[in-house]
Length: 129
Image 1: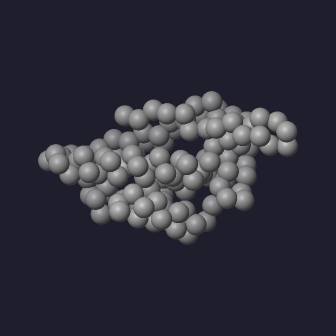
Image 2 (image 1 turned 90 degrees about the vertical axis):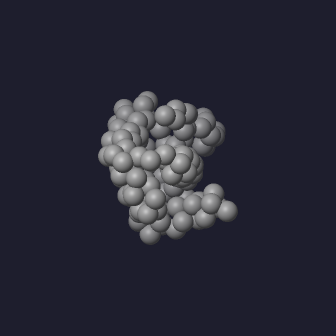
Image 3 (image 1 turned 30 degrees about the vertical axis):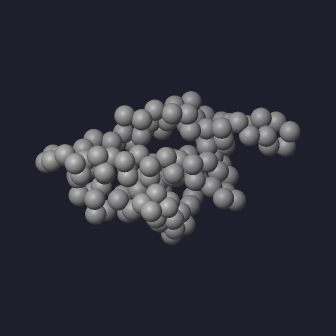
């Protein structure tokens, strides 16, 4: 379980705005799943794994990715996934790309999967070094 504040207060046109940065969310997800992958490699897990992403109090927050910006219209975001240990070992980049793409879309951002894939590749490579 990992619980943290993923928004930050930033000044926009002289006003404080609560901002969700997709780059920061991606970094947190890569760290979480990379740690989970290393931990589960030490255990003999034969069944499926349950993952839940839940974000609350999201309405009217600013969502950003590079030069793209959106205002979140929903009060909360929740996604549930059942993963196999193979998803974490062999398919981690693709699984993260799909999860992050759906998260960004739910927050109101239309981001090409190629851009998310490039960001995730960079983050995964920097963590695994």
